[in-house]
Length: 236
Image (cartoon, rainbow, N blue to C red; front, side, top):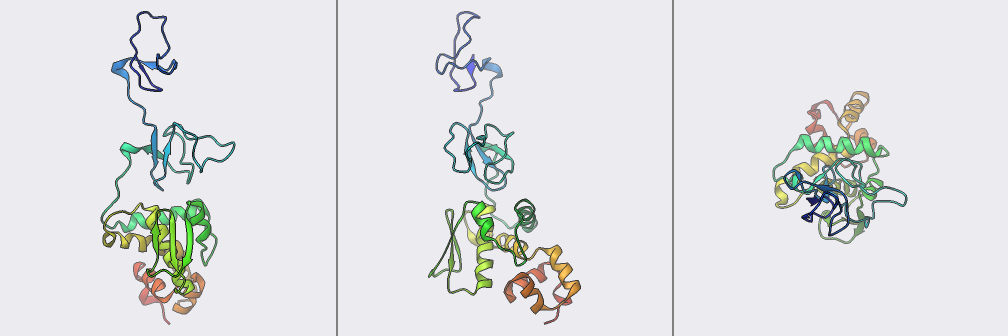
C-alpha cells in the first residue's frame, strides 16, 4: 500500500495494519491505483505558486483556508489552480487577443475605478510594489517591483505602469522583443477599454477629448484607435 499523504510504500502482514509506518496516515491506496498528488500548484491566470504542504503564504489571510487542491481558487486572484507540471509555459510570440481578454478580465474581477483608470490599487492587489525614481529606463518590472521613471509625464507614467502590470500578469520571460506587443495590447485595454472607446467616439470624436477622458498620451490614444480600426473616425 502507498500512503497518499507522504508517498511511503508500506508492506503490511495483516489486514489489521491500516496506518502508514512513516507518517501514521490512514489515507492508503493500492500500489497499482496510486496517482501521486502534486503539492505545488500554479495559478493559470496570474502565475502565483502555492505549496499546499505549508500555511506560510502571505496571501492567505487570518481565518481563511489555505488551498489544498486544484478544486480551490488562487489565494491571490481567485482564478483556477493547476499542478505545476500542467502549467502553461511562457509564450514567445505575441497573442494580442489573449492579452486583450486578460485586460477585460482584470476589469471584471477587480472593478478598476475610472476613467481615467487608476491602476495603483490593482498593482497592490497583484502583490506589486510601485517605485517612482530617477531611473534611466522607460519602466521596468523587477521581480514584484515596478520601477517608473519620475521624468515621464503623468500620462506616460500611467501607461508604463499598465505595461509592466501586463508583463507580470502574462508571465513574460525571455526575449522581450517578442512580447512587447502583448504588453502594449493589455496595457491599452486596461487604460482605454475598446467598448468604452467606441462609445466615446460616437459621443465626441475628438482626439483631445478622448485623451482627457481616459487620461492618456497622444501616442497611447492613437495606438488604441489604430487597434480598434477607428483612427479615421476621429478629428483633432
